[in-house]
Length: 394
Image 1 (cartoon, rainbow, N blue to C red):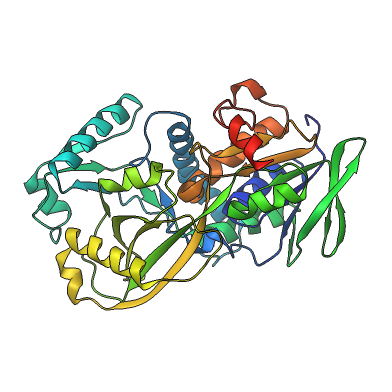
Image 2: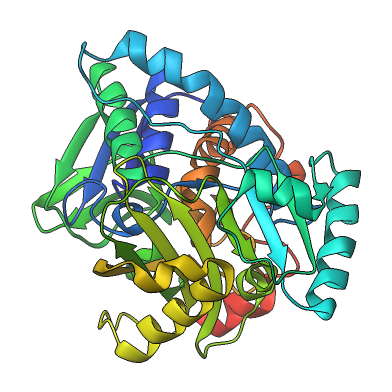
């Protein structure tokens, strides 16, 4: 679609919001549809991570590096575009500290950091004295640690609403409480969608519905292998700040890259601007079962105490969970669907969707508007690593 036209974006989470803003700023007419409220799904349950520390060399890391650059640029833009008093993004360049508590973990972490440095990631091995300066309350029982100063964080709900507000100011429509039920086809091309609120016509349809993208794409006649991957987070009561970076154990990278369906738990601990401490991270494939289970909470707490023993005396205020959009080859899906003209995808980011949203919007907009050749897109639907899974999804 090289010409400007009307684009329907399905999903008012942060990826859909970023795409809407990017397209409408190019002069494209945009309507965003969501069956629930904006930022009401995965974006509301995320921690707002912008991480290079958990990504090895390759296209996802490159997309995150570009996204972090865009996040640094967009804050001043939004301040100029939005009314005075609109909440800021809470962009915080807090940095990440990855800690290995075993010899095996230290070997793996060291190798991983070496690989990342070849791709431009700042990964600084730090000794015990430096670690005590960075995190005075961290356990002394660790083998090695690597500091990632490029890691950052935003407030995901505020960021989503800011992007949507910016898109609205440029003329985008955002329709909440509208469920997509099926396609509108003309001569084999997708020209709109049937919804719970009538037919919505468009020149292109972008599925950006996070973990629900598999269901939406199937309803439109082109299934993709996006599955929900459940995660749970503990939140402590407010207290004086004692955790200064995003701190996680070296097992986290393995859990992110694992395709296992059973429960994967690693320790991720960080403070928030509100004075609480967030404790994660779990990953489990169990459909859209949203129960919060004691076995998961106990595993998260036990892992966190290995890094920060002082947490044993801190009360937990609440727990919440959400679903990440999991892809079997661990790469997001960004681009046109070769099976159905007019259908585009922007999904499958798993736990990196907040950080990758701006880069995703840039890639999709460039391809949708004909500014970049499809062959240069490593996230395209017909990539070799995805073809067997597309057949299974069908």
